[in-house]
Image (tube, rainbow, N blue to C red; front, side, top):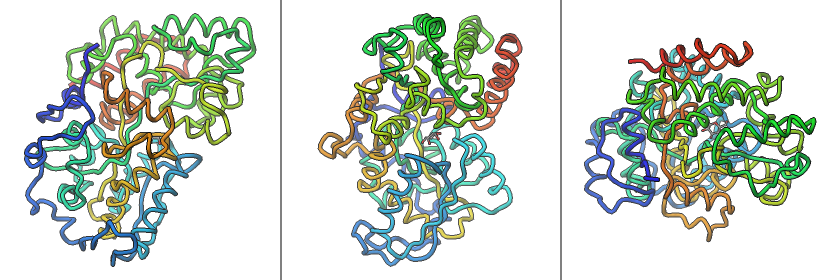
Length: 456
Ligand code: GAL
């Protein structure tokens, strides 16, 4: 299968840039990086802030004051990841006081609350935003500042993959700095539950959604287990995008975002039907949960499967379960060879009350120490390419994920903002919620609402 680089994501997200790399190796072409660097005069908001003084030396900084950081990492491994970053902040910037402005909501309700604050001109200093189309919304609304100069200052232009830099660049400016890269299309399964259902734990790389459905049926017919655990609307959108990738293939999936694949066409219609069938195998109480309780059902062995991003292993491992023995993972059914990409990135908010603190934070999340500490706990892979994951003791899963990121076809996540704008994401969530809460039968309305969400 040919690799769809973030260049293809660029086409999908409509960022008009010349992506040229084909892997997540740092680019040798420093001139390309230079082209992407805007004049320092454009970094108006950051200019007022004092430059962190030799911030690479622990304790060598004279930056002081608060920094309020907004994320939706409020529990479990996500909160631990944030804490790990706080630790690096405390070591590098001992006089900067971290204020955790996080709210729960797995990206959905959290983003709404963030928007309320931004519109009321009460921004945090830095907030979590997904690289790609989602960031575009904040750029267009003037809610984030140009941090290109910080890429130079922190020496980041050579350590992030050129493709990712290209994806982050808009009109020669970069507005956020990535902390990590996640894969969304992963199937997690409980080994005891699989065995109870008579399914070989080594045979969960399903070639198609149909093959997967056949095993879900088998589980339903022969056990009391939940065949496929899932949470509320955003986790259902997450499943939907995995089904679309599987049924359309990566190229046609990407075409959904540049108008070359018809949302109203029969291929999408077929995918939506299969999505509805999958929802029929999920827990009825799904709408009351965020991702974590749904994945916890696989930890507990009350559910066999869960489709979720690779923030799940941190949860699985934290409970003492062992990869390959207690749980297994595979690409989401029908998506082997495809990496459904998303990256968490951080802004310096327009009107940030503490721009110095925000700069210190951005230094920390992009530093080698920060990316090592955070990603080890969070389950993602560093966005930086200069870390030796094996030598640093990253998990087998993470080493394999990094390998997939370097070699698989790459597509962007809808739910996690790489391929869809916030408006499109919200409309997708509304359509999915309406469909699944009304029995997953009104395919016609579902498809027309999705087509409307991405029209124009
Ligand atoms: C994603 C985010 C991940 C993880 C996940 C679940 O949107 O990018 O880092 O936090 O939500 O909350």
